[in-house]
Length: 105
Image (cartoon, one colour):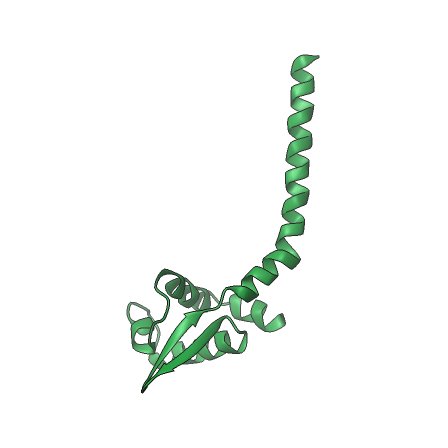
């Protein structure tokens, strides 16, 4: 899981993931378009995303297509975020109940 957090910590890598979310299955050339990074930098970022299993590469002949793998992000959500979200929802429910009681009484 450390690899996932490390990969997500960089804004350039998050930008690449966003691009794949919008249009999955892109080549390196397509991913480089519109980025203010060298091809070599994009390649290094993609390697880190692959290592974290956030990007899966499938070869089509000579071309490598990059696909977003959202499963690790979902695992982070389930393990780290959802339990805090539930706490927040419970607190909002308690606040609502308290405000309704104040209005009635």
